[in-house]
Image (cartoon, rainbow, N blue to C red; front, side):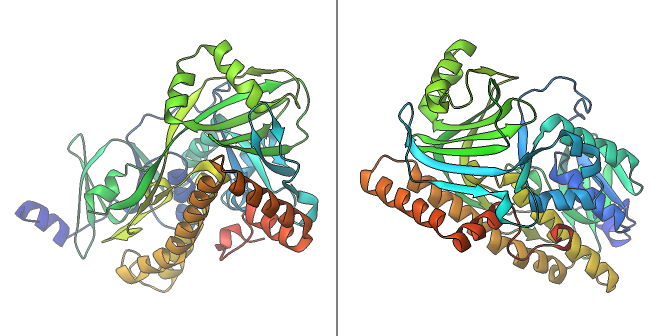
Length: 416
């Protein structure tokens, strides 16, 4: 603000858009659509070029969408574009054990038939979900898309200015950071983060198998880390395989035959022979939560606000809850004639989401620490605990509803 030219710009602010969303992955478009549908002018600024939105080949990336997330996608016009590509998750089986030794006889079994809403969730390939968002943005009035990197941001009591790498500026009432765990939006606002490294890496791929999965998702806890087997359309499943950083690095150096030879004893033979389908990916695992989800004329959504262990598959689902909450807060504030970027309005979003997110992050952190070890007493205790939950129908149903994203203070976009 020492720059007199910049100060003059802010003083007589005219807006290029009501809301500027920095980041165009999945949460950015998911937020832009309902905001535009609510009457706001929205600009999505993404540093990366748009991917091939109609890729014919599956690259191995997929997402678990809770039932509550499906409702939000339905309300904003995305679900009708992707429904034919969705694999329902009808059951979830959770067990504990060692690679090659099979699971413990005590475990959890969740069946969607115990709740009234339908499947607990759906598996969706990245290419279909991302392509649907890009098509929807093109079709939605009130949304502008810019491919550029934001290099600076300045705010005043009247608005905010984003400076792009090419020197252009974008003037807006509110900045929303959807730019990931290394959020430049948060860093430029001076928002720090709290968290720690797990010393684990998630190995992600998809496999083809001989036998049908019947819509059953599996979570197998091993001392090195959990293995999730998530059903895709056809005789295919998505794999999220957590290993120590050292083991993961060695596994990544293997060719496809060696990689699959290491996976088979962990996977088991309950789906017959398995083969790699698509590419292999790996991601370092850490817990990271922004110390504030808001700043002056700024809010953070999704991984920009929080990143957690994928043990419960809640990363994207937590981000979509942020989307639903922020849309509702901004829409209601606008109807009341409030400044949508005021600290009072943004505080409502933070009070809604930060405690719930921190609770979820701590739950996933505790679960990972409890199960990613080979202490015999802890193993006995957690196996008995899973057996007790499985034997109590009311408690079991509460866990099913939690897994389906149907509990807590749901935004309107996620309500039935």
